[in-house]
Structure formats: C-alpha cells, structure tokens
Length: 476
Picture (cartoon, rainbow, N blue to C red):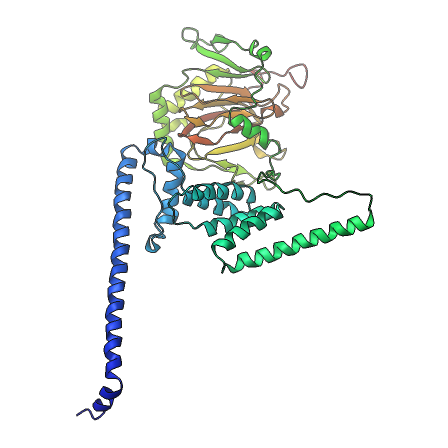
C-alpha cells in the first residue's frame, strides 16, 4: 500500500524516533518552565493579597508614607504590566515607617531621571542602587544595567576618569557588552586628546606649570535651573536656614484678636500669634473645627483636579511641574459651612469677601509642592486687575497636620511656617500703595510623610479701599 515505507524505514525511521523523543523532552521542559512561572505568579499573588489587605484597612495611613505611595504607583504602571515577564520586585510590607526603597526602586527612579536628562539625580539614584546591590540585596536588576546608566551620567559631568573606571567594572562583569566597549574606547580617545593638548601647552609656554586633571570624587554640583533661590528654598523646607534671631523673636507676640472690635468677636476673640515681623505674618488658632474641615473636604473631593498656573508669556492656564497638587473651588451656595467659613475670615481680617475669590481647597499628596511664587499678579494686562484689583491679601487655612514636610516658606527673608490643623496664617501681598510686596514670594514645601489639605481665600483691592486705606509712602 505504501511502496515508500521500506525506504523510509531503512533510511529515516530511526531518526524520527529520536526526533520524537526530543519533542517529548522539550514538552517536559516547557511544562516545568510554565509550572515555575505559575509558582512565581502564585507567590506574587499571595504577596499582593497580603499587601492589599493591609493597605485597604487604612488607606490614608498607608499612603501617608511616601515609599508606600511611590511603590503603589510603580506597581500599577510597571510591575503589573511586566508580570508576564516575571520581573518581580520586592513589595513593601505595608508597615508604617518600615518601608524602604529596593535596588529596583532606586534604579527605576534613576532611569526616570536619566530619561528626563536629569543626570544629577541619575547619579544619586544609581549610586544608591549600586550601593545596595554591592551589599548583597536580592534583586532582578543586574549590576551591569546600573553601571551602564551610572557611567554615562558621570561622563555628562565631565568626570572622565570615573566614567572609565565604572565602564571597566561593567566590562569585567560582561565582556561582550558592545556599548560599554565602544564607550571605553571613546573615553580613552578623549583622555589621550586631553594629554596631547597638555603637551602642546607645555611646549608653547614652558614656564607654565600644568597639573593632572582633577578627578572628581563623585560629588557633583547641581546644574543651575530656572529657580534662583532653589538652595535657600530647599534648605528652609528641611528646617535649615530659618533666620529667626533672638532679636527678632523679641518682637513677636501672642494676643487675643477681636477683628478691630468686631461685634461677633468681642465675646469670643481668636488667638493670634506673630509668625514674622516684617512683612507681618500672623497665625490664628481654632479657625476651623474638625467637623467643618471634614465637610469642606467632602465637598471638594469630587471636584479636585490638577492645579494650574498662568503662563507668564501667554496668560493661559496650564499645568506645570513646579505646582503638584489638586484643587477645587467652593461657592457659598454649595453648603452653609462655606458661607460660615467665608464670614469668619471676613470678621478676622476686617476685609470684605464680596470681591474676594471663591474658597480654594487644595490637596497635596505624595511629593505635592508649589515652588516659590507670588500670589499677586505682576501682569498689567491681567483682565481681573481692572474689575477687582490685585490680590491684596492671602488667608491660608491648614486643614490637616503633616508628619513631615509641607511647610510654607518665604525664601526672601528666611521664614518657615509649619502646618497645624485648624490654624490659619494671614499676610498682605501688597503695600498700602498697591505696589506688590516682593518679599512675600513663598512656596509650599514637598509633602514627605502624610497628606496636606489647605483652603485659602484671596482678598482683592476693590471694596477694601477704606478698610485698608493708602499710607503716606509707597511702602507703608
């Protein structure tokens, strides 16, 4: 029936038997590999089950720790998407104050900085990842990957010797790494070129003494950016550099404030405390009750949206990296508590809320901040200036305590005001003449631990001409 069968048997059947055996062996290996993957996936699922149980039991408490918040975002954006490749990271145990960044976390932060062209932070994060890797931490990130990014970032700072050292270390771990080999040859050429130029300088001017290039020790200066007072601002946020001298401290007092004998406050005045003498910044205590705060938050939460800033060139509202928060605006018609809080701020300040802006509620979560800025407008073409005037004063309510970070700082004169739930701070943005007080440039420091809630009211010039009349000079 099959005339070719004898030929096949004599020539190929033996090979087919062994080929089939190889297929069976390959199938078994595939099954073992899949079982191994399934086992790892089950392990991942069990870890996630424990983690989500802890995080859902106290969501706000869990997210109050920045490492927990960062890892949640990282898992949702990276780990779950890479689960099929089994790139499993060591997840947090969810215990407050015991969370720590793994090698993978540090590497991820460094990679993000690298992609943004921020080589300063690339070096910091990659060095930390390498340090933890060298200490023996278990991770799926290879030392080769870390050295690859670190060596190039170091090269961007002109530290050629250290870049070569790191690249040689990389090649010792992976001799077949093509890019590292190419980079090392390039670095060697640059170094040779530097030496040739030195020799030329020696021959041109023998009297000049030359020294070997300075090899940096790994401490690199942060590049200058758009924020001239960044060092001062960040120092104040760390609680450093506050210029509260004993002499200035003697000029600060506490008192009861009745709103210039406002009938509503005569019997129950507010406790007022000087935070700074010039410009005068005061803090009021027990401005909002816990019940009022929770109601305001409840009203604001459904409306929260990414906070915007006005582009100085176009005047158009847009989001910006230097303002990271969510905000919403509440009207008096939304709930009686809004009208009640507005009326209270009017009584305390002696200014009218009729021309003031709506009550703004802001939430600063993980890393939430607002870099140094002015509250008053410096744009003469601003349409609101014609009808309502400029922002005369700022009344800022703190609606939560913040465990770490979140201070309101004034880089110009070195003041730092820390949030206290239920208190409020108040200052004038303009002199009595209507000129802007540039000393009031301030910032909301990044929230490190916890969550920050604030609400603020901006009072405008119109309607307050007789409530805060002009002085005799421009700076009264």
